Image 1 (cartoon, rainbow over the protein chains, first blue to last red):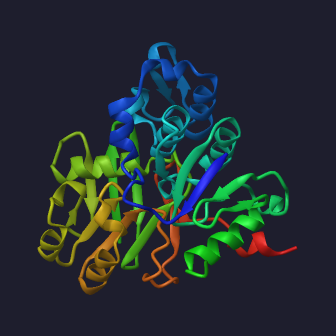
Image 2 (cartoon, helix red, strand yellow):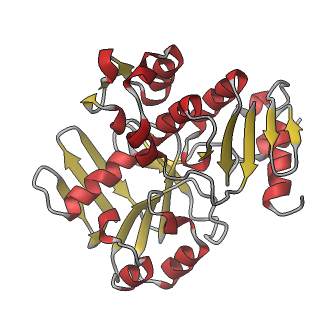
Length: 155
Length: 143
């Protein structure tokens, strides 16, 4: 399940770039989901040995991936940590939901992540837990309302 | 005003006219690389060509005491991203508002202290800034 904190704590990891650079392993890039996320978010291809082929920068190392993709990969392989997901673009949101379907993961948000488009505001199955108040959000509309209440201190 | 960078694999041309230019949008659009190139330009590395209407300072200008560092900068362009934690503090926004500088900030923080008429932007693949096309949250609340 995707667990979301509105706000941050001292334990929230907000330094995903250096953290990822320090801990990533070559084997992570053999994971099909990682390859899919790198392709979708950074428009880049994972080659053998963890080398990345970026259409913009050429051959790069995992250290040069976007903060968003690094955060997604950390969520996949270091799920016990809580990550500052405000630093990730909305294009990471659906992937966070997908990782949350596979395992328990934790993020902290100080803005509303558009996990789904407004056309899907009432679509059930978001399955996101706000850890501040234990509220389970089944739709994006639930999440927006819960976030606004918590962010503005209305419990 | 304009801040432009040209490097072998990327170019950016950022036009700004308000005190704060907040740059967010999707991941993977090149914001971090832009900041990296700005650091190289600030250090006058020859492989980055830079045009700036204002003197500018980049991430690497700021050390452990950002208040002291920021106080040394006047009538300049300050380019920062979220790797500097102080950017997310109300104290920074307050100090920036009181300064004579312009700010291009790569962040998705909501910044309630910053007047809402200062629009958010995203970086396009061709290196331009365009207004963030994201619709308001109201769209999630309408039937």
